[in-house]
Each structure stands twice: as C-alpha cells, then as structure tokens.
Length: 268
Image (cartoon, rainbow, N blue to C red):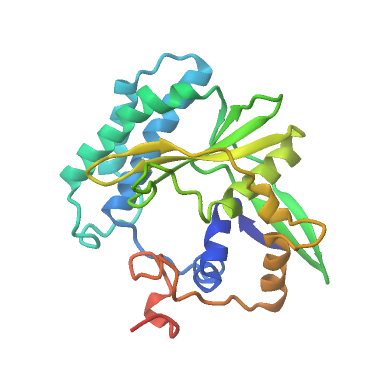
C-alpha cells in the first residue's frame, strides 16, 4: 500500500525526485514569509466561506482576525530570513488586502457547499500487489454548485505568479491536484463534477485577484482510450521506484526543495 496525498499530485509531476524526498523520505524545508502569508489567507478565507455555508454571520472583518493570528503564529517552522523580498509588515498589508478582496468580490460569485472537505481514501489497484491510496482533504479547495446538477471544484492558490499581463489566471500544471480532488469527490459522494477552477490571490504588492475559466482536470489524470493518464504514469514511478528529477522546475530552489543540499541534478 502506497499512500499519496491528493494535494501532492502537482508536485509529483513537477519533480518526482523532489516529491519522493518530501512525501516518502520526509525531507522538508521550513517555509518563508510569503508561504506563511498564503497559509494565513487560506485560513481566514476558509473561516469566512464556512460561515456563509453555516449561516453563522462571521463578517470579513471578523475573519480577518484569523488571518493576522495565523500569520503571526504559524504553528510550523518558518525561516524569516529565507525571502528578503518581503517583510512581515508588508505580508500583513498584502494579506489583509487579498482577504478583503476575496470576501467582497470573489466569494459571492460562488454557492459553496463544502470548504476543505474531508474525504475517505480511494484505493487504486496498480497490479503486481501494489495499491495506490489517494487520501487527504481538499486542502484550500472548495466545492461549489455547478449549473447542470453537479459541482465545480474551485481551488484557492496564493503565490507571486498566478496572473499574466493580460489578467488571465494561469491554470498550467493544476490538473494533477484538482483532478485527484475530483476523482475522490465523485467516489465519496457519487455526485458528478463539472470541472475545476483556480481562484488566484497574488501575494505581491499589487494584490491582484482573479478566477480562471472552468477546465476539465480529470481527463489528464484518467487518460483516454488511446492515451494513458497521469495516474498510470504515477503507477510506473511507484512500481519501479524511479522518481525522475526535473532541474528545470520553477520550484528547483533551496527555499522549496528538501533534497536541495544532496541533489546532484540541480544547477550548481
């Protein structure tokens, strides 16, 4: 039995070598300020959206207190000197702006039915006595009502490069994670998904926000009658124990990779 968190699938196909280090060998790096900013925004927006579902009346201002508390008390290992391009004061200003924009402009566009939903594991028989178990919650993602009786899975992303110069939210490389969420959701609830979306909250001084078009994240994971999907390729990684490196990955950086110090494939 090999357990894989649904939220980690994107990293598996970005750099399988780094993924193996983090998820199988437990080699991790402390996060930086910008990552902590993202975590805090996710926490506050989740509180706001859950209140919308429950009808408890938590305001955007109330939920902003969660952002500040989470930013200053992250509950994990943070290297505050890792990224000198942002200070804690700047992070707080950017995060509060993003939180306010999200609550006022983005959240009302959706009718949410679940926030960071917990799901029962889904087992995939890979043959040769190997079982792949998808597990975890919809980390930072939502379930929203769609237009044809199903649901859409919007995923909130924070980072510095989420929106292009024309204002388009970038969806490249998002299908593995969101496809895993869609597959698990359908197996857990027997409710069809109609697609996925990215909600972009850009953690730069401009604090830009946006929502992507709806796209099919399952197809790359499941494949077609003539092309294997990413799950089939992942099975080959797991069966062989070969996890190929990708020194061209945008995450090939000492801030993000727990294998950086020992990796012989990266640029010096």
